[in-house]
Every structure is written in C-alpha cells, then in structure tokens.
Image (cartoon, rainbow, N blue to C red):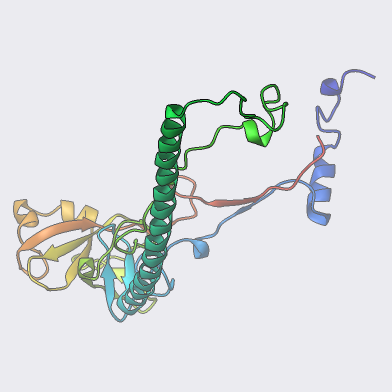
Amino acid sequence: MGRKSKQAGGHNPLTYHERKHYANDSSYGTTTARLGQDSQYKFGHCGLSLHPAVEHPVATPSGFIYERSTILEYLLTKTQSLKREQIEYDQWRERQEQEHQGTQDKKRKAVVEQFESAQKVETFKKKKTDDNPLIKSSYWLAQSQPEKDKELSTRDPPPKRPPSPNSQQPLRRKDLIELDLKWNKEHQVLCAISEKTIHTQPALALIPKKDDKAQVVLESVYNDLGENKERVCPVTGKKLSKVLKLQQGGSSFASKDGVIEAKQYRPTMT
C-alpha cells in the first residue's frame, strides 16, 4: 500500500460520500448552516426585543434603533447593577488597602527589631539561628522561601455609566434620539423623502436642533439633494444639528458585511 497521503481519501480515510453520510446520520464532522434573512437584524426593529419599534422608536449615537420603553428598562437595570458592582469594588479596595497597610507595618517593625538586635552586645554562647540545618542547603523548603511583597492587586473599577447593548459605548438617557419612522402595512420602514422601502440600504437620521423627532431617509436620496441639505431638513424645513448614520439591516448575501454562516465544530478522525 502506498503512502496515506497518496490514497483516495488523502489524510482522511473516509471518502466524500462517507463523510456526508455520517454527517447526516451521526455527530461526525463540522456542520455548517447558512443563515437566512429571518435571522438577520432588520432595519427599524428594536435591537433588544427584535420587534418593530412602532410606538416610540429612538436611536443611540452608535446608530442602533430601539423601542424607548425597552432601552429605558435596560438602562435602569444596568444602572442598578453598576451600583451594586461599585459597592463591591469599594469594599474590595478597602480590604486591599488594609492588607497592604498591614504588610508595610510588619516590614517597618522587622527593620526596627533588626536594628535593635544589631546594637546589642553578643554573648559568649552563640545563639542558635537555624533549628533546621537543611534550611541553608534546601531551597525548596517553605522556611527558605522569600516573603512575597503583597502589593495592591489590580482590578478595573466598574464603568460610571451603563454600556450600550450593541456598541458597548457609555449611554445616557439624554443621548437617545427620537425618530419619526414611517411604516407600511408589512411593518417596513419607508424613506421620508422618496417613500422607498428601507431594507439593507444605508440610511440617515436628520436630527433637528430642537427637541423634535429626527426624520429617516435613504443616504442615496439625501446625497442627491442640493447644497442646503446639511442646514435644513428637506422634510420639515427645520435647521439640522447633526446627520447620524444608522445601522444597516442584515442580509443573507455573502457580499454584505456580517456573519451569514453558523458552524458547529465536532471532532473528526483524520
């Protein structure tokens, strides 16, 4: 028999049809499944509940859309959790400082005792210093090991503000931007200018200077406007303070960014 690499199966002793048969009937081989469009993030849906944000849609500075009640409940829960973490961190920090202070006191006391003993006159009989004669030659004994200097352990304090669910950036309640989303009968968002359905196309939120709702338009439609597009909202006619790029909806096409396949690794015989 020739070398294994020269056989029909190469380094794998099973043929292609055998691997397919075992993969379908048993837990052999790594399986890959392509994610459909239903499992992707849809534009206009809440990033937490995954339902259409119809009642009070808001956007975060990172461009994700949420239902206002859902994101406020999340911020409240996270804030309470961070308060508990801050209390635990303060208690841990206090214990570390007390241990560090105790170590420093022991060091100072040892230095003083060593100085006082050096000033005393030695007697005729030499004081026995080592009870165990192996201490000098046996470095693995616990008595011969140097004392470790206990410094303050490093631990990151909890963040001051709760992170955003998707971008993990600090998020405040006043950072939420109210949106004026226009929906069709299929619960799909429409462009405020062209009334085209927004699926996976890049979209923008036109944020006015006052506390008014932001209009959502397609980026391609907004770029086709005149020179005053960055100053005045083409829908409401109000002055704009910022143009925010919203997160695009997911797609099952390989040309789009994002994960479109799910893999489950299972050990194989090679």
